Image (cartoon, rainbow, N blue to C red; front, side):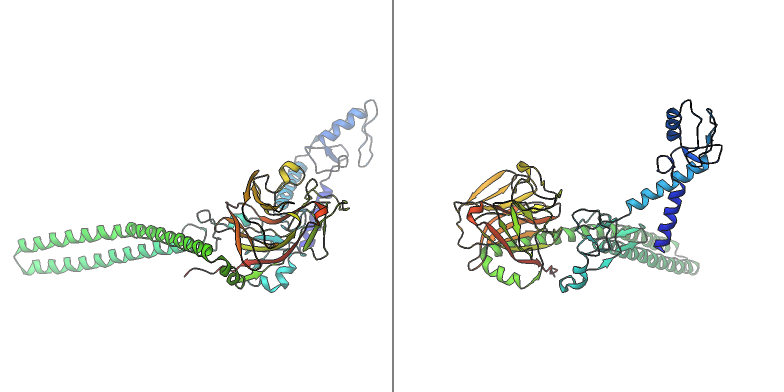
Length: 469
C-alpha cells in the first residue's frame, strides 16, 4: 500500500514539473498550445530569444514574437497543495539516532531508551537479552512531546477524559484523588439534602398535629443552621484534601532527599563494599568505540574495545564527526537517562572523559576534553600526576594511582559524574555535580606515542532501577 501511494505521488510530481526548471510549478502560465511553465522561466526564455519566434519548450510549437499567455489558477493551486503536503511528509520522517550521518530512516522507536533505531541498530534490541522489556513501536517523530510538562521525568501514559489530554502516573494519581474528593463531597451533599427533606416533612406533619408552633420553629431553625454548617464543611473538604495532598507530596520529596543523603553517606563510608555489591545488580552493556569520531592519530582494535596512540596518521575517511586536531575518540553508544558504570584500563599519558555527543570536533581549543562546558575528564600525564578538568578549570589531585583501572560512574538522577580506581582497594578520586541536559558518551584521549599510551574498555554496566517502597 505504501509503495502504491509513493508511486502515485511520484507520477503527480512528474505532471506538476516545469519543463524548463524541472521543479514544481511556481506561478504557472499557460501557452496557447495548452502547455504551462513557470512565470520566471517564461520571462527568461523571452529575454534570451528576443527577435526570434518563441517556441513551446514542450511541444516545440511556434507562436511568433508576441506570445499570449494566461494564468493557470487550477494548476497553481494543485502545485501549492502538493508542495505543502510534501513538506509535511518530510517533517514526519524519523531518522535513526545511532547513525552518525542522521539520514537513515528509523525502523522502530524504543520507548524505554527514548531513541529511534534503523533496521541495523534495532537488531541489538531484538536479539540481546539485556533489552528484554524494552517496548519497540513504530517510529515516533514527537517523542520529546510525550514527556509530562509538569513532571519532566514521567512519560504520558493515560488519556484524561475531563481535560482531554494525555497525563503521566503522578497526574493520574492526583486526578484520582481530586475525583474521589469531589464524589465524596457530592455524596455528602445528596445524603444531607435527603435527610433534611425527611426532617422537614416530619416537622411539617407534626406541625399539623401539634399546636406548639414556637417549639417547631425553633427546632427547624436549629436544623437549618446545622444543615448550612455541614454544607460549608462539605464544600471545603475538597480544598482541604488538596492541601493534604500537597503536604503529602512535600513529605515524600523530603523522605526521598533524606534517602539520597543517607545513601551518599553510606557510599563514602563503605565505597569498596558497595561497588562489589552494585556490580551484581547491574545490566551489562556492550560499549564500543565510534569509528566515525576516532582521531587519525589513534588506532582501534577489531572488537572496537581497545585504542592506542600511533606516530603515523591512519588513513580514515573524511567525517564531520571526526576529531581532527586532538587524539581523542568517543563511544558509539550515548545515554540520556539512568545510572551507568564504565571500567577502563589505561596506560601511559591518557585522559578519560564524559562528554556530550554535541562536543566540537574540529577546533583544538574547544574540542579537547575538559577545555569546554560539554566535557568532564580525569587526566594522567607523563609524570604520573593526576588532575581533573572541566570548562578550562584544572584541579590537581593528591592521590597517586596504584592501579591502571579506572571506573567512571554517570548518574542522571543525582546529576553526578564520578571517577574512581577499581581492582583491589576502591578509591573515589573525584566527583562532579552537574545538570546533564544532553546525551553523554565515554571519551578517551591518548598522548605521547613514545609512552605506548593505550586504553581498553573492560566492562560497562547500567544500574537496575529498583523502586523505593
